[in-house]
Length: 288
Image (cartoon, rainbow, N blue to C red):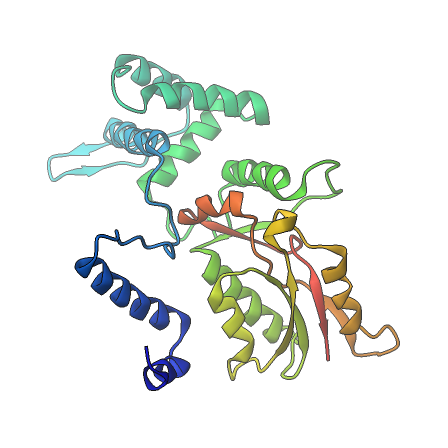
């Protein structure tokens, strides 16, 4: 590709460049024996079937619970009720034991009840009521039982042993990019970030996060703190020392604020679901 064609990419964003590269790769694969492989997908080229089977089967049970309360000829049901719902779910799964997802759900509920000390009816009702989706805009933050489960996962995946003191206050949002947008907007609205501030960004990271600081709304400078593959995508001591170059203990304007870091590769497969934004999960340095 000549230099003039390459220069047109200077004005494109990362997703636009990605689309151009896909076009080039597809064109090449049509004229050669090379197979086209989109390695830039946010998700793998496979799916986990077991949880999906459980999800869709749970929805069928939820509809029967709705009809149990009210079944109108026009196709209208009622709101599932919590009393005795765990027992009814267990009996329903036994009756439909041959259905895909039945064995998964039969094992999942007692496991969660035992592990987290859930009240069975309250836990099953939350699952049923949420999959029915009849309580918008409730919850305003996150489902109670689901938050406990997600919190345990984050502690396992991101904290390890020994576990840190305290707990994360989780807020479920649409996805990882939405979480970053909300964090930046919240920090600006609360005067924690100002144009010209220098922030630290953990890399490698989802490309749009690198573009956010450049937006006119924020006008931030940033220093990258790299987590190299050779170090299992963990920050090295050398990289962490970069924080000292942007933190001046003598400056009254120096402050440390939460910002963005990338999840380790083993967590990236979970990106298809809802993301959780935490007030205290990730901390980097920001100075003016």
